Image (cartoon, rainbow, N blue to C red; front, side, top):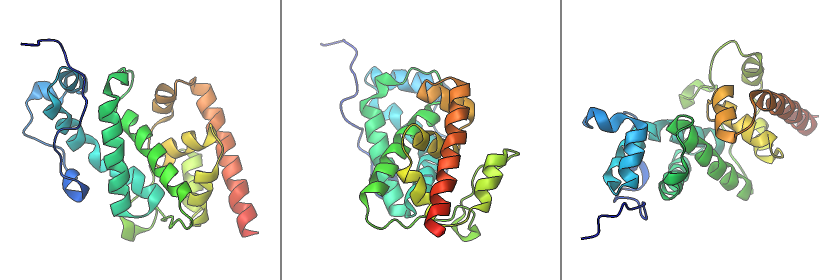
Amino acid sequence: MDERPRTPSMLPPLPRGRQLFSSRPTTSAPPEVLDERAAVDAVLAGERDAFRVLVDRESAAVVRACQRVLGDLHEAEDAAQEAFVTAFRSLAGWRGEGPFGAWITRIALRIAIRRAKARRDVTWIDPTDPSRGIDLPGGPDPAIASLRAERAAGIRSAVARLDEPYREVVALRFFGELSLDEIAVQTGRPLGTVKTHLRRGLMRLRGAVDGATS
């Protein structure tokens, strides 16, 4: 009998669409599996069902981040599904240097932005619209306060059209709700560089929005 450790080659059977995602994390998993590192190690060792714990814990936040970009729940769920499949296949690449949720969110936002750029028409949602039940991260950050004041739908389209590295930092901060420290860990950039990219990205973003409305 082959006792060698296995690497994940396919996602455990999971329902697609809304049934895959839950707004509440599972409460039935044993305590030792709830640890992210333990869950990932279990999957890499061949316990593929352990990935379900990670899906249950992170799916709501991942779908929410994708919906901020895409504006459509069903399309956001499809993008999140693709992100989890991608994460499963490259799980060995998660080094545990930051939260698993931040890592999967980065993957999901790249997919969502790619899908948005492929569209001719993008229905960008206003995340401050109470009817959407979606809010940008709160706090004293003046950049966030400034973005809250920018309610024009065109700002969402402008984010997708930003050049790298600005697009990723802006998207992770405002769509993915990652802290600056988390962005630094996920992108491998110094914190000071992340702050500079965010500041310059916001300047370019406002310039694009002002140019589109003038």
